[in-house]
Image: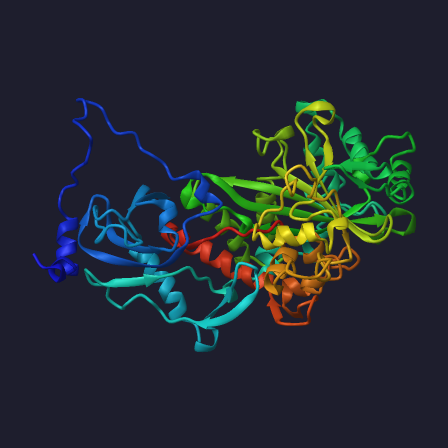
Length: 573
């Protein structure tokens, strides 16, 4: 039979309708079933890179599905001849071994029979068809979150899909369909001063134990029934960290003793002066409720991280009528879901907030139903204190200069069991390494994850992140062959706390401003073009809320097979 005949779509479709014959090294004993092998868990954070993919409607539906997927994988050598994904129908084997629907072995094109909801595909295409031409574009961002282009889109689904028709598909979301103020970054005073869920300690207005108060969040972290630690002791130990020099990864983090006068003493006084901290008198106000599903892993490769959800608070001066202080506290909760179907359900809960009037009773009820999935004690029994918290981060200049970011995590053992301990700031080397050859060597290595040590045996990851300077603000010393290429320097710096909160994004230290009501957002979030801070060029454009809008819309309105394209961000911000 000629090669051209073998490539005929109708012949391929006919072959695909033949019964499946299992290949084995020997006969399988009677009654024995082959155990189902799941996807490679390493692919959740570093999945195969899909360059392009298409779906072909089979001439006759099979028990396994109704369509053939063909996907070109750039790094085929890494995955070999097979890899697995978990879709709505269960585990699907993608093959590049010339069998099971694959046309040619080892050509980098992986194939599988899948069951796809044709109606969902049609609806996805029709959403494009209904848009005016001027709105029928999507923003394209690179892996550094830089806006590259706005690409025109056309409906990809034919009016009448016929057997053997091929549909090229790719991930896309319609940003205009998502309102970030309702589904991504909720800062409206209709929410952050909701009288049934928040509390103003200076006016007495609100609910002291409301579900969006700082005291409620801290009390749930303490989880007294499990840990035996009172909320007062838990909070006092946390704020006390600033009173003393901390040694973190062998780097000294200086004390900021003004914490006593600015935060602790007024809190104790408001609590009755007995030395304990009444969590209903906590000197913090809600600034924002944030959806970070964009920080997820790729869950077509199994259960894992569905990103984060965050509560952002700002400190207030209770001795001055609760005037805001330049001190932000971010509770960053990890969300875990059992695969792409559960992930989509989670995304749709946030997306569906867009159907409700912002700040209305129905909206606030729905938002509370979301936050109560991750804030309460016991939300993640596998983690310390049974809390879903990944980390708590702070960004302040209220206690001393310069602006400084710190990170705290719950510990489940040793003398800090049950408490928040100060830990390294992720992705950020110690500031003393700024501009050094050691740092240049690391950046030139192309590594994306900053380790505790570099080189081996030398502490590297920082204990805090002072801002400014951005990371880093010039060529390494001494100059010469170790100078880092501009784009490599930028990519590294952007991933650090110091770079993202300063010159790389032209941000004045905070992306959510604790000094304004409602909290103002940085240009990095809302749209800004920034020249390279080291050499003045090239200009780079950011609009991260637009990126997150497109991502949420694509996730909430897709089928799992589209997620094979998704590549997790290498960012902590």
